[in-house]
Length: 114
Image (tube, rainbow, N blue to C red; front, side, top):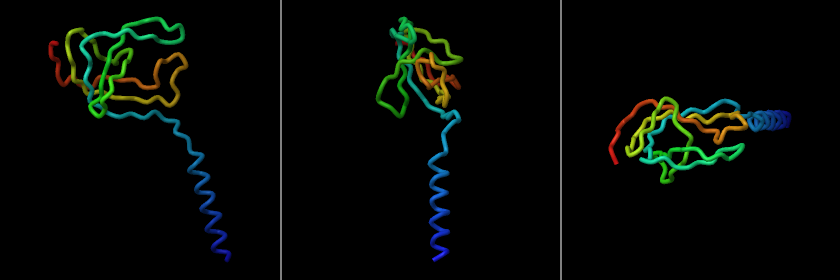
């Protein structure tokens, strides 16, 4: 009987420790994305000023996402890009950041005139 109690006590402590673990580190993945050929208007907090943004679609997604930019990448209109990017999910993004996700250019895979 003592073994059963010790086992359940150990199990409860393990479950409690796992459930309290918090993801407090940034997550970084590598993605391939297509960049749309035109700028789009984007409203960003806190004043919701309209700025020029770019639309990207990751190879594993069917949806276009509008972002403010990609670190290390200079966008030229009327070109469709295929890029290899580092995608970083910030665990503690700044309050004035429009998104907890940022992108960094790793490689330009293709650049085609539209």
